[in-house]
Amino acid sequence: MFKIAERRDLTPVTKLFRVQAPLVARKAQPGQFVIVRVREQGERIPLTIAGYDREKGTITVVVQEVGKTSGLACRLEEGQGFPDLAGPLGRPAEPLLIKTGRAITVGGGFGVAPILPIAGLLRQWGVKVTSIIGARTADLLILEDELAAVSDEVLVATDDGSRGTHGFVTQVLQDLIDKGQRIDQVIAIGPMAMMRAVAGVTQAPGLATLVSVDPVMVDGTGMCGACRLTVAGEVKFACVDGPLFDAHQVDFDEQVRRGKMYAVEEKRALEACRCGGGHQ
Image 1 (cartoon, rainbow, N blue to C red):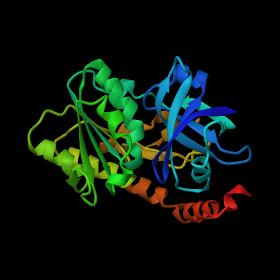
Image 2: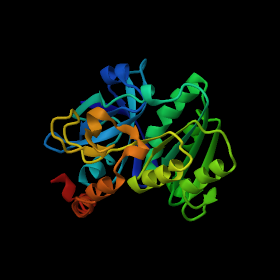
Image 3: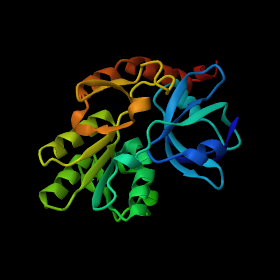
């Protein structure tokens, strides 16, 4: 059992867990993820590592309710835990990141969590970091203070205008580009539509852009093929070839279609979980 040392409610549907996993914490790097099971007979779901403490032997993961398993995970309390946790998995972000200059990190909704350790690593190297975060409304913004601690500045956008720029993160990014500010790299993590929009904004000016693609994933080791995607016309697996890829080479249309394949089933399963059916 991987015990939960701390639980925080970030939003009504988003929870942060600090989990005791010494071996994973020892090897974890920004950009990587773990695969967990909430119950012995349950499905396996990937969770990006949002932080780690090698001395305390803990990793931080953030879970957002989407389907049954993530709904059950969000019900876990301190002292409880995950029966299975495998990782770290995926390729670290470090080889793909700039080591000098200025980077723009863009986190949409739940995507702010995996942006956090990447921004921290960039700042550690002395890279100037501007972080843009967004959500539908101010109440759904997460980890702003934590991101501010590892960024030179944090810019906020909300769909309803309740905080920061009234609009999307892409509008804030476009404004920085239009002002002619130096930008050496953009790293965007969030909903597929958001990452595709960021790629569209940075394509014309030729800004190097990375996105973290997390399609349906089963084993996380490249054997099942569920997380396949097309990058520069070639088939890749997000679990072993990513999850970070060149945004301008990802076939986003394919990913959007695949992301909707189980949307109805996920919604039904989550509703059943909320009604108590998830415990059966």
